[in-house]
Length: 305
Image (tube, rainbow, N blue to C red; front, side, top):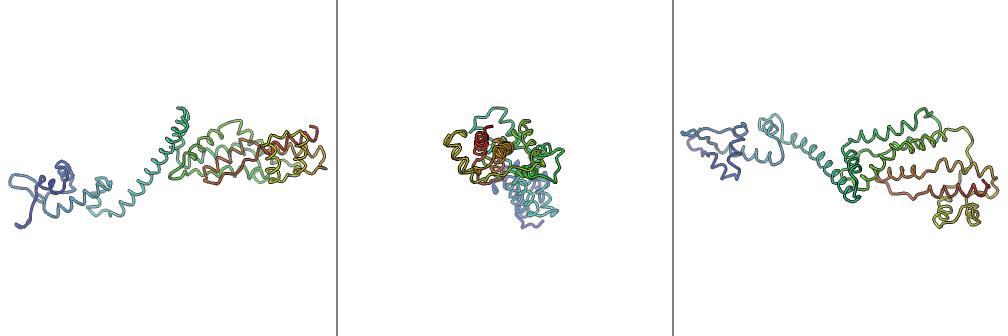
């Protein structure tokens, strides 16, 4: 040790750096900032190099690095960049968790949720993306059990039901949290499961389907009639029906078409797609099932069924 080297006690270091004496002593005892030497009275002394090392330890600790990571950096076992990269990943995961928790709490507060609802939302928020996807996959697998996956348009619809973004956004909206909760409840409902399976099985039928009505025409004409409260079995309702279905269609054709429309029109299934849209961040689409059910009722009325 050079006689011209300025040395500092722990107390002097504390005054120079603003750190607590006990913190400097702890880091020194841990080997992060070893003393340069000792005074005649046995007090630890530190030189300028030790002071610089102390500043580095303080900086790393303020950045959130643990003592083991700091020691590895000081020993050159790893680099600051490598440790920082690890911490960035950890912080991003923590931030995502906090944002999700905030969204859940916002939803609970806004809805005035019951304990059961709050518990379900919390459970869904804690699930991994894979676990959330498994909820949907289990539902679809049950619906498709025993169905020939090579045939039928309804199978394509059922498979499309898997396309739920199980990886919630970093900052999910309360609406997305709401949608996930409602979707989880919906797919666990046995009546809903049976209804979707009925649609899938019906879509596998070999009978020649009735002529499909034009979707846009149904939305425009039947949708407006339904919204305005026009009775399907009224003269006005029959006039609206003639805008959608050829007036010369037989009673048998009308009944078959009504049955087909009823089979593939369900408000809860439509709600499923609406919820998927919210979760996946898609623009909302106008509801159509009510219009198709009005059409089915008008078809039966016109056929005398």
